[in-house]
Length: 182
Image 1 (cartoon, rainbow, N blue to C red):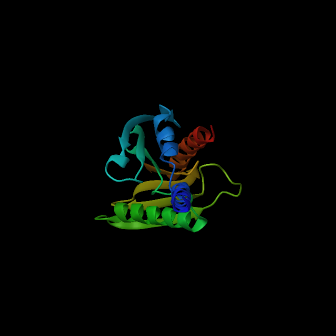
Image 2 (cartoon, rainbow, N blue to C red; image 1 turned 120 degrees about the horizontal axis):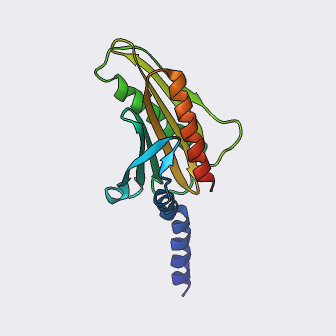
Image 3 (cartoon, rainbow, N blue to C red; image 1 turned 180 degrees about the vertical axis):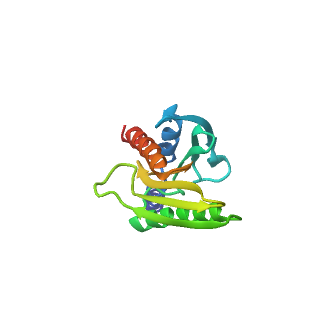
């Protein structure tokens, strides 16, 4: 009897350490039809391929103005500040490498920022700015945060002048954070 109770207690404590997949599923299922003037154009269940990979929502305004929102848990429900900082840094690095690959990059940089006041679903921001191939500008934004044990990563890509990309991104982020706060 003691052995049974010990096994049940061990299984219960192990289950609490694992992710609550329902949080990501609920965010995915309740995704708004538009965010910041961008229309929901694609939904993908990445869990079918790999447990913990989550879900992908894609919003598009124009062909080259695209927001990808990843809702995933990596099989966990708690993330340290170091985990989130690493995830944000790796994502920004991957995007920079992707943009630079096979192009004549003339200028580019990656900037990181953290909000001063804690906001549900927002841990930090990365901004990737790049000029390449005859001064064509590309702006990519990465945000990462946790909402109810679910990692929420937004990647927004927009070509052209930085000021207009910033405005579109700010609108999109405001709408996403309002959605997560519900």
